[in-house]
Length: 133
Image (cartoon, rainbow, N blue to C red; front, top):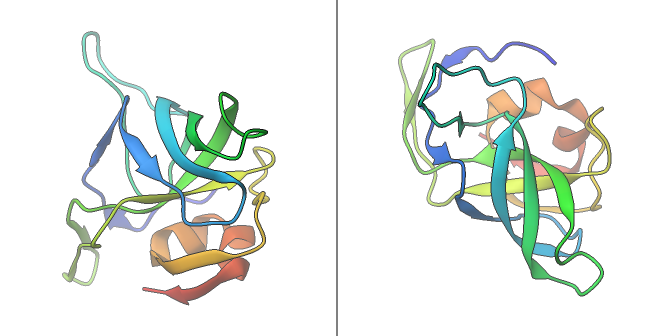
């Protein structure tokens, strides 16, 4: 996993409900934990673009519901700054469901644009995306 080249504001808390933007069978995922996120005592871990998180499927196909899955955050509503000074903000939050922790997506199609930071960090996800911003 590469480092992210931006100053990301962590906009998604643990417990957030996020819609998925792929055709894996899950529609809404609840974030339970963020992998490799260290916090001080009493603080709750948060996720941002390009982070790997554990989540449970709350809405979706009957086979996918109530299962724990790995997800990658590809869009967030909270604005963040890139190194060139531009501020990026998406219309919605979105994630992609993964098969394994190596970054292979479960679905075969990603709807909408994904962030450039997530595409650089997860190349297998960026292959399925139509648009990268």
